[in-house]
Image (cartoon, rainbow, N blue to C red; front, side, top):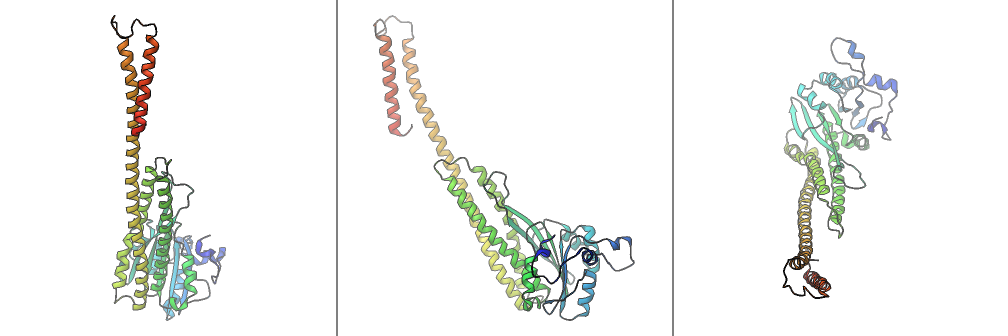
Length: 369
């Protein structure tokens, strides 16, 4: 069952027969065998009159006919991941451009606002933070999808791809504010955009917590190599940025559209744009912070490697001293110091120990060991 159907407070509930009737393909023109096939991707279809949901069950065909006969009304049709076969009859019934069909069935798109005759195409990206106990080199941090809105004079069609960005809560919240819904389809577009941008802020806060935790681990005394985790988090942040930052241009275009949008709607979108700018600023800050953490970690690794090299060099010097003494006394000469002394062997060993102990103490005092 879809997210919108599970929301409490909705005025109606699907049953199996009603679902089949409400999602039946009924394009204009001669009937075919395909006309009896249900559109499984339809989530909800409702008619709103003066901002209030009209009782009854509608499919997109009967709903569109109703709003054309009822002043002050519009249709909101919601779909989830429709196929081309699902969306083609809907596009035909609403007179949508063939490029609109492609946009509605493509999962990953860049946020944009386009106009096809009297229909506006508004594409937004959805994001969701993926909970994880520990950040690893392969774990997902953010999951993205898309929402495509087709906004006409008397209807709005919302198409969602991916699990993120459920529109059921948006519909429920707007139905509690009939004064807002009375402003027409663009009020739905604002409600969807506002909800998605708020979710961007939630994901940004979760990213900040991950960065703080990673920073604590990186600079811990017994820290392991965290470069891979830093790089993975940076990749996920870039995915988040690609979903959020491009939305600035469509929102700016809507704010400047003084002819197509009412002043009140443009004011609503201006508030959404302010929240979006805050999120983008956070993302830029997080990117700089991750770069700093990565550079600091690489510098820390370089220092650790230098310390290791100094220790290796110190122990090599101690071993070299012993090798030199043993090498000299291993030569076949008659006249060597203490060569014919009874305690010469023990004396040389004692000398080697004294030299090693002296070098070790000197390296310890200098910080090499």
